[in-house]
Length: 240
Length: 72
Image 1: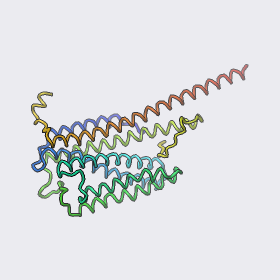
Image 2: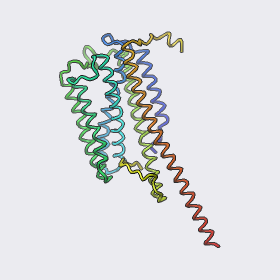
Image 3: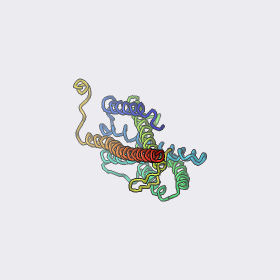
Image 4: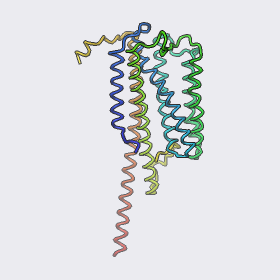
């Protein structure tokens, strides 16, 4: 059921990524200040936006889980957070590469944007041990949902706090006044954002499909009353 | 392809080019690693499904044998 529409979605994602990379390298002009290094912007910023939005979406699914008690929403929440953590790893690595190329350092500790993203990432990194430490499946799902809601609410608050902070080195390029992105760069950025967003949705759907298949195998095994090979038991949400 | 390359500026493979290439390669590598992990998971599911199909067939054969024995 989760695999429905996965093929056209995957094709659209690949097409969007190819279009995005083509625009980045063959259409978008070189930045007057940073030159070729600025091309990392079209990868790093969409990844960060999608990862942060994914964390918030995980919180929204968690609210739906607590309201309805349906474990499907818990699985959506878990997979959304899981995928956003993976995207978060990509954000931190590409950001560090950009920082090294642009500022000469892999990491700058007095830069609010970097440190706040690291705090959000580390907070979500604790989601897994927190979740897997609880044996009872229902209790685990409830506690994980509470975590996802609180952490999801923290993400926009954190974003606003950083926007209000006086940054010395991190540029603000989406301003409508002087210093905003020119049209060709904005188009390239929006296509990149769409591509990364589609990639996130596709991978979430892919992960849910795999979890659903795994859950169905477990149900079949229980129905047949057959022993599990090796008796593995990982306390991840089961998708029916 | 050649026309496309001729129409576009050469990629500056100096210091900046290496960092840009590094960032994009890391992104693609992460996707490849993720897909490889998912492929391993799908292989496991396929193997388990095969085992369960074998169980089901074995159980059906036993039931058929018991039915024949009961009829006799």
